[in-house]
Length: 505
Ligand SMILES: Cc1cc2nc3c(=O)[nH]c(=O)nc-3n(C[C@H](O)[C@H](O)[C@H](O)COP(=O)(O)OP(=O)(O)OC[C@H]3O[C@@H](n4cnc5c(N)ncnc54)[C@H](O)[C@@H]3O)c2cc1C
Image 1 (cartoon, rainbow, N blue to C red):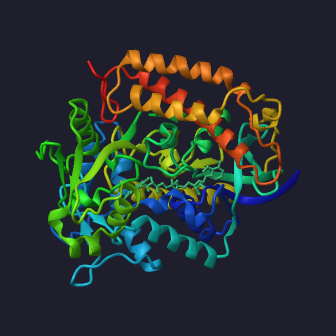
Image 2 (image 1 turned 90 degrees about the horizontal axis):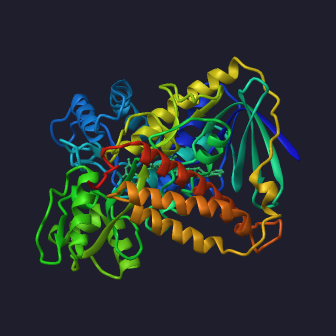
Image 3 (image 1 turned 90 degrees about the vertical axis):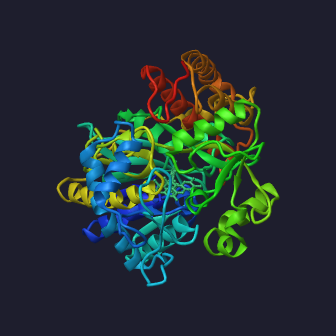
């Protein structure tokens, strides 16, 4: 097995991974970033609406208001100190992004443009049309390349390995192109592998890469997970494809209508409330639509060009003239690997940031625009902390352990795991969705336990080594199954409703 060494190893090249890489490198560490995709394709590039910072560029706003809105939306489940830190760092974070080249949209007097998103008391989300995440990700990538950060694509994390004192020591990686295992030894590791919304399969706005691999590997290595039951359902995904129509559409004045043409809720209430209101309409037999026709073609093309393209491409309708059929879909996972304010997990030397981590800033319901903020603010902190840790510690020797990958060849192929993945998504959407009951969750857990038992009968059909996507998809399914069980166990442990975890009485 080939062995590589570095000071700080970062797994994941989304906004969180790249931010942490830049700050770890600037702190003097020898950094290597691995991703199972290509850095420019990470999920961060799908973010549309914006990144929050209380600049008051459009109307009066304050850091205190940002903190208050974030805490209210979190339903008492966020840590006030962490929220205060994130919101206070927001202006500096956005100014830094602006300084390295993110092309934010501008007001007429040249300031960064801002729009209001749900649950915010002022226009606070700084945006680049509705391509905010794409512009941020690609600029971070440019910056990382300019700093000479080593970036390796198509490397799939299998396991996190520890040293003799229980500290993090290495990552076991599958090179997708060759099918060979590789060992990356590092003094510290930052996990930045994104969230787990794809456990809901196609009932999710996320890319097919959000399969919870990092969270599952961290849990297998002994990392604590927290708040896994808090899954945010975004109110407005396209009805047939679950592609997101961003909150920017409602932020710019879009309405929600039922089949009778009636508005039925405050469109800019926090997402958990709007999603439940839409769900209630759908349960009454209504269809639900987003209406932005009154904004006019010129405004839509200037401010919401991506939303128009997506609606045309995936729903075959033009929002300039037509109502947009929508439904809520799993969008963001507040739960994840438990970290302290320095992004340190309970495993020494293992840090986590971004959607795979839980910095206790979103609580039971994330505010729109705060995820991009979190990946930059805590990406920076994780990068600095991991570099300092690496400076003060030696390269440990990893204890190589068995990986599920090693036994896959022995799995027979009696059951089609792609079919099981679809079933898993439907089951979770129905039983562990916007509204849940204890009976539904119990039933889902039993079905998942049976799937887990059957996993050895769901092997891959493709036995080739080179570029075996069938194998990668199977490994990802196994990770999702593991994490889905943790979501339900966590949900069953929380007796009463709270934010995105809403129990029907
Ligand atoms: C459609 C959409 C719109 C959004 N809009 C907004 C918005 O307007 N404002 C906002 O604040 N938030 C928004 N969000 C949320 C926000 O975009 C994400 O929470 C954030 O970008 C996550 O960044 P990340 O770096 O943590 O993870 P990601 O960007 O998901 O990156 C994860 C990285 O980990 C890698 N990886 C995963 N598994 C493995 C593995 N096994 N081995 C190796 N590498 C692996 C992936 O390849 C990827 O590089 C939106 C989300 C979606 C889906």
